[in-house]
Length: 167
Image (cartoon, rainbow, N blue to C red; front, top):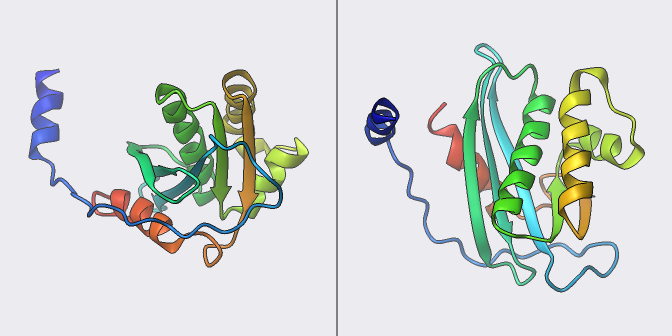
């Protein structure tokens, strides 16, 4: 524990500015008023297989209500990093007692796999975890596919910046 604390203190800390309100794209149907929106974004280095996973939670008026990040070794692809970021965001949402969540991802493959129940072999375990966590821990959960240009730029930038500087 002491070594871990020393390592953490030796790291360069990134203090992001207070996030302004994010303009949110409309969702295809009404959602629960207490729904928290979650943007996830990973940073992945193919040469080392390491990645940083980040997520930002905001309420429906666009105010940030939480964020998190973590680092992981042995990530096989950018798509796997996306899936791991979603799983970590869901686990973080549970810790924050979030019951209604709306995930927003720019990964068309992941969104389609989660919506259809068809899981690529290389993502099977992580996608199964996401489905299990979702069905057992949330009153409502939605997922919205959006190209990065349709997602809140500020949210994507903050998530990416939060992890990229340490890789």
